[in-house]
Image (tube, rainbow, N blue to C red):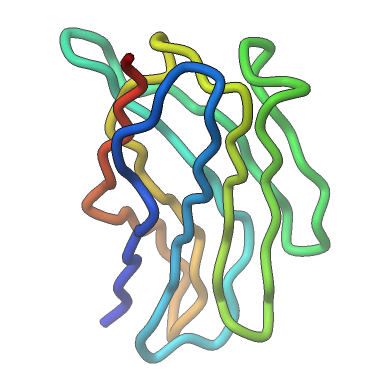
Length: 118
């Protein structure tokens, strides 16, 4: 059984910063690609940023220059540093990972709420 647990969400004013973490645990052989998604009320879930196992990042245009994705393979943990936050960044942020156990499967965390408001 593999679990992904997000942390670091909260309420922040516009222009502020937050750092999200996603820790994978369980009977893991290897964590491959990881990603952050978000879902705002009334919207579909969207990909925010992804990172390969060797650390190559990718971002959607609306967060480029403001968000930074990173990972620590030794800890099976991924991070999302979010700077200059805007009200439109308000959403539940979900962690996603492709994990090898005795098979390869795709896992989701339960999400952490980020609210950007004055």
